[in-house]
Length: 591
Image 1: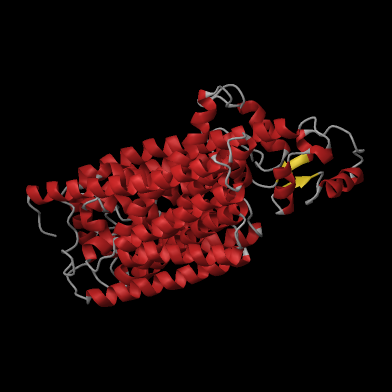
Image 2: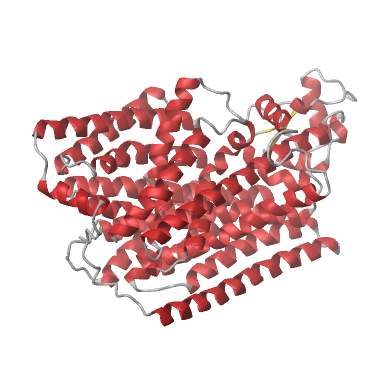
């Protein structure tokens, strides 16, 4: 890509700022109108459902309007996304990965385990590997690995691993958005699944990475407003049941989450440390997490975006944890001491939708709840305990926070918009990363070979359609869970991609070593998962990934040591990437 004059850059930045102001004003007006409708007495169901559906349509329209046939924009965002916006968008992707594990954010220590591993991996991706990708000029982590290990077997194997993990994240993000629409707005699951799959295609299909990153940045803004507004409103009124920065309310929330059995008990220090390492390895090699860095102007901008990513991710994680903890305490206060026939009406409605159990049963009416409690030897008129009304997962607590705190339908709709937006952002970036790996990195060699731009884009978009179709089927049938998909994606990334990524910076590693690491990691991951049986907790996926990564790395290292000599191509690659100008690929002819 040719250098652009400074005046053109300043003009583009001014144009960009005006567009961002326009989009921000549009979102604020829409949400403000919903709040106004709530104040004047519009039907609560309409007020709560309108904001998330508007969010879906607005993000899809934003991605579609950013359509482009330029390779530089489609696969790299034009290398023109400002660092602060790239970091903001990446924070949305990072916190979306943690949403299925929100109870761990609220009720467990962040110093070890899933949360610690996620932030360690995010730090490595945002501060080291992301800027390194931008320095080399590749479009993705699979492009870096393809340039380092150009033989067909390791090249296509690693690209397949990157594409599979990215596709799984796309399906997980889509299902998170669908679940939020269904559970929080009462939408039909089939229709919601079709809408979210179509919205993901509208974002990633026409605009590629540029459209996906800007849609993710917009989703991050929606999430900041949707999560921050209820917390700020209760904080200003002195009614927030937990202290934002720790202290009062958090031990009670952790106790409730454990009693309700929606937060897994600690599995022991050894397991938690293993999960920390494995999750960190998985996150650092995830293509969607690394994608925003390649859209920045240069290496320094990529590093600045990494700092912004970490800062915003911590803020979002704190907001999610506070919302879940406050919702748990508020829900317990609203049912404690109440008789079964006098519970708040939203509790019966949530139980009827399968989100809450009353006395161990899902019920729809007070009379059904009375019979369920009588079966548990709780006579009519007996005050209930918080444990008698049990949410079935943390997603319900997060979405129910405004209702439990009595903030009204508009706040509920805005929080639902935040969850939908984050899920859709993960879906769009995952779609684009998967499509780019298949349509660009697998079929176009970056070392000077030429392929038609139209053919590459057509193959990429075909891959998007196939993954979006799978996302629709998974969301409509609920055959998988978002947490399970994210756990499997992290496992594939840690076991199959991370070992070869580490070997890429070793002078003795070549194509044979990369293939040995890939096959060893895949075999170790698959064998351990089979021995564990159905893995329902992310710690099981993490330990399987750690076993696979250990086996794969050992296989690659032993193969390299057996060669007894450094490889000239590897020495040149490592020297140029770490200490040189980093330009390991020729400029893309389609850019």
